[in-house]
Length: 84
Image (tube, rainbow, N blue to C red; front, side, top):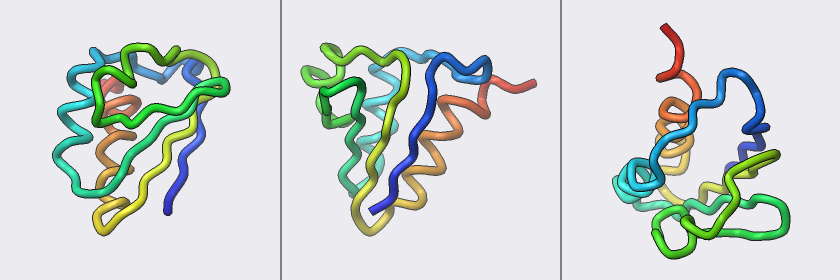
């Protein structure tokens, strides 16, 4: 299992439509969850993600055969795509 903790208030954090985040997560077989405050949501489930406050400290959890690739891609869409 991989975890990635981030502060969404960082300047480099790029807010994106949750539908894009969900579509990206669904490209991978691994489980992907995000925790904000005390609430956890399955990133592949719209109904769970839409009710989650994606502000402050977020912790992403990746578990499965392609967890490394999933972590890299989620990181890219939330941070690196904002550069340039």
